[in-house]
Image 1 (tube, helix red, strand yellow):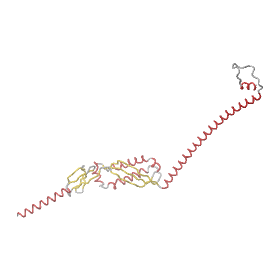
Image 2 (spheres, rainbow, N blue to C red):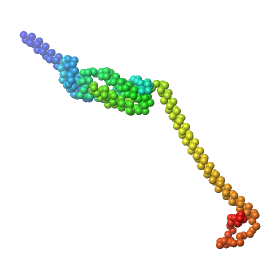
Image 3 (cartoon, rainbow, N blue to C red):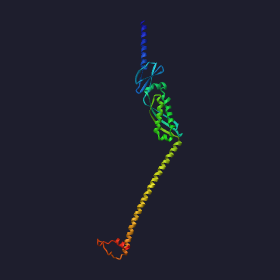
Image 4 (cartoon, helix red, strand yellow):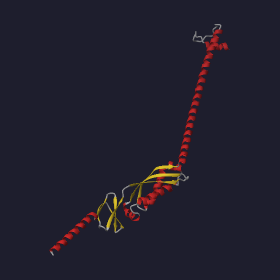
Length: 267
């Protein structure tokens, strides 16, 4: 009898030990900082969410799934058509996070594969929808406006699932070779037109400078010619002068004014 009791006690101790080990290993779960715990009982997710920290659970019956509520990043690329039917390859980077209050709802409705299941397809659809509103040229020139429109469209789509869009960045727009060549040709034409305009302005400035210089030279030559004419007239007068002085002298006495004599001679 005594041996039997010992066996029972040993079995009980063993059972308790095993249960203790199981409880120690599978009887609790730690929810890390920035995460939310979703309690799943016999395969059914509960609406209740668990906050950060250490939580008890029933081994083999209950498990706790952890959802990341920190800001995450997803890259998506794909092709779409612009308003003027140009093929556009777009690469975007989206920053997002899961609303803590809706973590359980997202897990129950979508599961842990929400990026592949709903987010990536929604991003592609938003890119296509917004791209179709703009011409290829406008996509380039109004990049910030396009990104804002894509953000707004995606935010509306994801609100139902509890996914918050924190940032939407277009990292690259790529177009067909034909369109790129057309853009290059347009830029070359614009550069040539600008160069021609600049050369025309330079030519006008040089022409105006020459006109001013020519006018200055003409004025200088006129003054010089008048000066030479006066000297020649004086020399000719002196050659022909008979030495007679005017009968009436000025108050200054003996000053001889050749110009006045030339004036009398002309009279």
